[in-house]
Image (cartoon, rainbow, N blue to C red; front, side):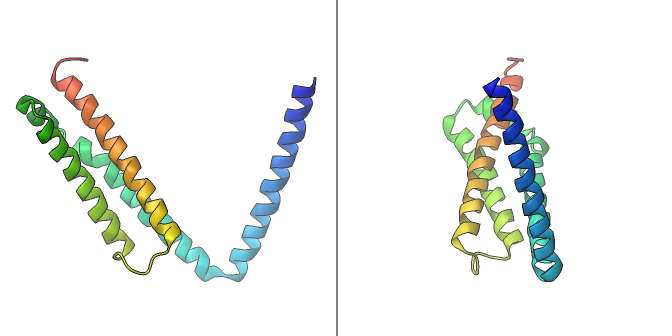
Length: 135
């Protein structure tokens, strides 16, 4: 009974918070349209970068079997470092350079780099298993 009651009340509280914060955000951006434009630009460039990160290891699918055939950890590390370097360079280009960004922006970008590195590793691991006939 308490679980159901807690879920009901929690759902109402979260709904109220979302409605109020959505309304306040709407009022704020109604009064400050330049901020809305800058937010949408950031979202647009972030989506472009995420798309590039997602496509890059799949678009270069032929590299992974070649690295697997070398049977070298150094070759695998160079491949992952190359993917990470491309991810970093594209992100810095889309950001408009390295200057003029705050600590929060760099923290988010660093988190994105770490996520992209893990993604590249998992995709390359999957492709390597397929190249070795593991799947």
